[in-house]
Length: 142
Image 1 (cartoon, rainbow, N blue to C red):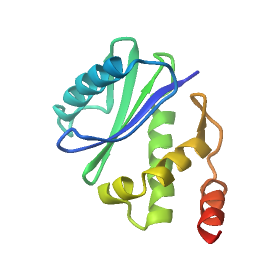
Image 2 (spheres, helix red, strand yellow):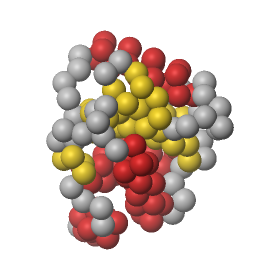
Image 3 (cartoon, rainbow, N blue to C red):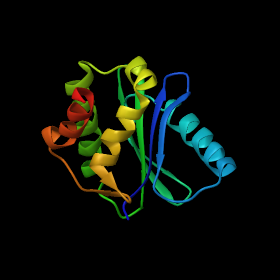
């Protein structure tokens, strides 16, 4: 299993979306999110987008007012995860039209559905934007 969790966080550090692929209690999740968000938001743009925290490697990227943070195993390829983050943002852009924090907040179920189409049990299973968005478009038609 490569991906352990995916977080979308705004510039103030508020979690807008959290998807975990391993079991953590609510207290553990809250503590982990707080530590990681503080660590990533405190970094400058000149620093790299990879941070090691506990037994995770955190790969993050900022798009407008949202930070996309992905926690992976230490042996995972960081550049592949950056590509995955970019694919996720491009897919959301295609659906929402220039995705922003409000799109995530008001359409949280669609954002989760996109993630579920892309990642299964911590492994990336789909990378085609049209294949990811087809079920969502079919649900909207119904």
